[in-house]
Amino acid sequence: LKPSFRIAAIRKGSPAHNVGLRENDIILEVNGKKSYEYKLDEIIHMFSTKEGKQIKLLIERNGEVLTYSFKLQKMI
Image (cartoon, rainbow, N blue to C red; front, side, top):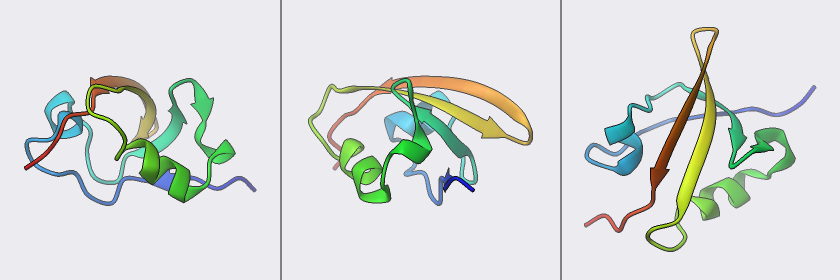
């Protein structure tokens, strides 16, 4: 049994929101690495690092696998 990570909330106006990520999406991969190879705090840290960092996610939503890509930006 491998852990999975589900998006609990998306901040309106954030890069993730703007590309179409949704609450309850399941993260399968982050930047090409299987999500279960990360600890939760590593994933959280990745999303709060420097502005401009490129993030690529492989997501499962309602049985469909989707790819999203965005750059982190400072949120006010």
